[in-house]
Image (cartoon, rainbow, N blue to C red; front, side, top):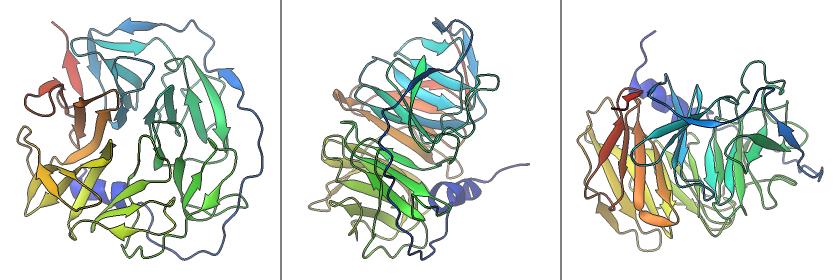
Amino acid sequence: MKRTWKGFFTLLAGIMLLASSGCSGTNKEQKKPVQEKAAKVDYDIVQANSIKVEQILGIGYPGNDISLYVATDDGIKMYNGSKWFEPTTNQSDYIGFQAVSDGFIASGHPQKGSGLKDPLGIIKSVNKGQAISKLSFYGQSLFHFVGASYSGKGLYVINEEPNDKLGQGVNYSPDNGHTWKKSALKDFDADSYGMIAVHPKNGNIAAMSTRTGIYYSTDNANTVKRITGPFMVTALTFSGDTILFSSVENKKVLLKTLNPDTGEQKNIAFPFLDYDNPITYLAVNPKDPKQIAFTTYKNDLYESIDGGIKWNNPMINGKTELK
């Protein structure tokens, strides 16, 4: 079945239409995460001569590696600026992938035959995917939208079905998934939820992309305000205190920075993208803010190491071949 990018954005920014819910559970379980090997075969990271993926699920720069990580339907792929690498096993679908200072956090589905429960709930890896820690809701819930502060202090999920521990909608954890509270979202008037970005140092600060702009909060999404015009925002991430985001305006794909305090926006030059190929994920390396990357609906990957002056295109239509 042929997909349309508008259909994609319906999933990306509106997977759940807003529904009022009085449920606001808190997960009181504070069990120490248990490291669990995710496969029975030897784990190694090897250079990939060619890569072909059907879907990109997220990107980011984990602080314990020098590579850009691309989460795909065929596991994690790693790009170091000139070469691609991939693990020999543990190739799970890491939905909601988030890079943090000591590894990555994600939800998703495990690789078949791994012995892990499906869905993964929320997991974390500090050794490039060799093993995972089960943070919350292991074997119980799948979260399409996960937001995490690079600092490790501040974790957000959008819960599609209310349960005894999570309310429906946005929930946050200040302690790496041990306890949870429902965000009140006061003054949030969009008709759908979307991608969540979290400040790299202050987990209380978060922003959400929607079909009608960016909503910003400094108190765990308990109160929010719209800080852009009512245009469609397809992706966003923090670069220090600034927000890097992509919008679709007047049938043009744009890339901008935004100062949340002043509202000032600046355009970033980048390779031309057709209207039917919008930006889907954005990443900034907190250790080097000039290193930025984005993916598109058609599974193109672009990366810049000089703040957007020059761009490399190491993946086209989900494919790459190294010469």
